[in-house]
Image 1 (cartoon, rainbow, N blue to C red):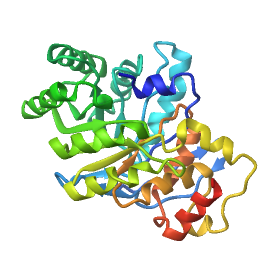
Image 2 (cartoon, one colour):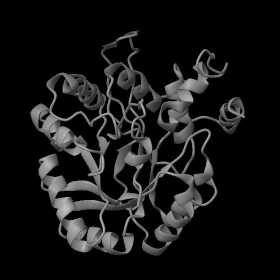
Image 3 (cartoon, rainbow, N blue to C red):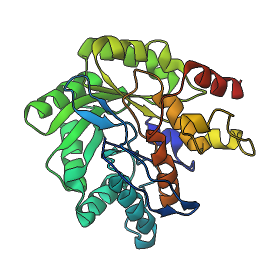
Image 4 (cartoon, rainbow, N blue to C red):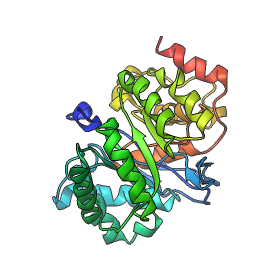
Length: 311
């Protein structure tokens, strides 16, 4: 079965993260000094009540840099800004090349593992293969447990989800999850969510890809399942479509200072969404996009305005 990494391989990813309700001040970014900010927004995980930052950080593409020291340098700063803002949620997977190893090394080097809500996935066929893959993930991530363990793109979910439940009972993960990354997988995702009721589901959603609204989001709300959104920028394609365009006239009143913030706020404005997990390897984008965790949620009229922009 194809994975999200297969789908986005070769694309330049943009992104960022933000976080838990913690006071913060941002450092000066490439574009100039960013304004002081108050508490970041956080939302409750329905199954536990634990609060999670509304924007986390993915790692597909951005953290697939291997051991090259020069390539890792900007990632250190990306992580510093992420955690300085109070952010915690980092999502990765064995299918993202060397990303797990890079994350493990940098979190250990920076002393940040204890602050991290760490999520990874099992994308294998067969119980033994799934267990071996997870044990390898723990070694690469330099940890003995993760906060969230997900079935990657529903691969062999009938085997892997019960395994994840066993690992949860053993204290190897605190939450269970299921993921997908394309609209064509939404119906199956909804069926499996209905069958097993995980703690989390992860799904693609953006201003131009709103299929999750039809079935996946209502089901998550009905069953009390937390929702992580991937591909909120359509793997960077949304930025090409707004190149040279000015932000909507209402952007400032919504606390929006960039298109990245607009796209993240759009995803977050759906009431089913718990957090968005874009990926970035560029510190200046991290600083910009962290600001999407402040200010009001978009109104229905503002959401419609963005939808019509791409109509």
